[in-house]
Image (cartoon, rainbow over all chains, first blue to last red; front, side, top):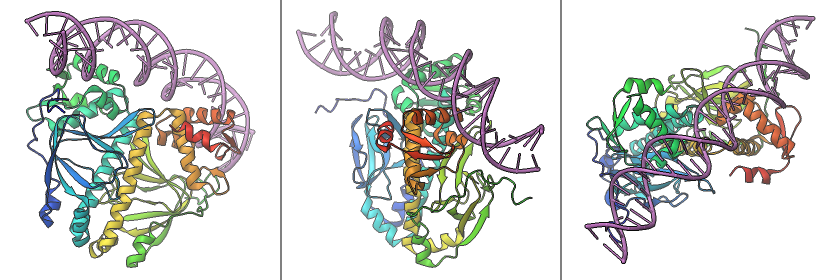
Length: 226
Length: 226
DNA sequence: CGGTACGTTGAAAGGTGTCAACGCTTGTGG
DNA sequence: CCACAAGCGTTGACACCTTTCAACGTACCG
């Protein structure tokens, strides 16, 4: 296993300045130990229906959570970027699989130690509930997108979301390929590519490399998002 | 306001025999008081972004939770049937609006009394977390459906779900119209109608009235669900 | 008896998917 | 150092699934 196999095609992502340290609300209270771990590009972090032993927080890199149909169709439920917590389960198994999109470092804490902390401290239990409710809210927004928005609206929404979450200097450095974006937005990679080209032609955005995007007209995008 | 205005077009739904009493896990612990209330067909129960004062459980009837786009496009996130809890929020506002699909009776308990109970009893807090996590799991399944399944697969999934949840004697008595089904599955009402007609033509199901459906071949449906 | 809501079906349009070709970059191996 | 393969992204042509628009029938109700 060569260390350079599956090297990322984009530069590693630096944590943006506004990372909300969601772990702090938990670890701060009860002094839980968080260790670190690194995954190579495309490496599986955990599989669907696998026992949920850990809860994860992205330190650097990016992660996709997804479900598969038997014939290979894939729906990505969320992208996890630096600062994001993922893999948090109330039951004992993971609802979605998770993979590193690029070389990725995560902090992790044991789920059962979290359970113990929640059992001893109601404020921890409440924090866990609120985090899961936040995921639910995002999922419900995404259902609206998947069920009722057209391709341009979906792309506009995606760009604004990425802009908010990982734009540092006004440039978006996407860690994921067109297929990942398509599987997140319920589109094909070709439709994603065409929509992005169209937005570029309209002057709404500019490329410097396929994954380096500069938004030039956020108001137009917001109006397109429906 | 005539009592008969907006009378339901289908007969009221009886609670199925397998209703999981999700409230029991909460009220049983701390003796919360649950009162009852009745809503007429199409009446709003609460609106999007409205303060979440109560948590609800359907006693009889049916409820739709949904979000709207500014131009009127609607995505129904869930149907709530007898026994189901809805309107449970970790934050102080409702994420989705809710309306009665037919004349509906609900049990309700005050959210802040639930909050107090959760603050005093960790097992209540845990129960709330688990309920929200269950909703999240369903939402993630639905994202897969909305993003990656075709019309027949969506309808097959829907029918099997309704069969499980409200079939008593092998007959499904749908409380909702074709438009509701379409807005739940990310389709138009015409596509829903055509898919159902097609399944009838194939002998997979039979009608006795547009909302009375008998599944004649669940295995075929399960295979169609992908 | 007329109006409205609901459901079905047909015909046509359109948005997205499918299939294919091509260019570019990267990594590999001769 | 160059040839080659593989992955990624873009674009074109066409197919097809779903939507749109319309007509019609039925049930219910004022």
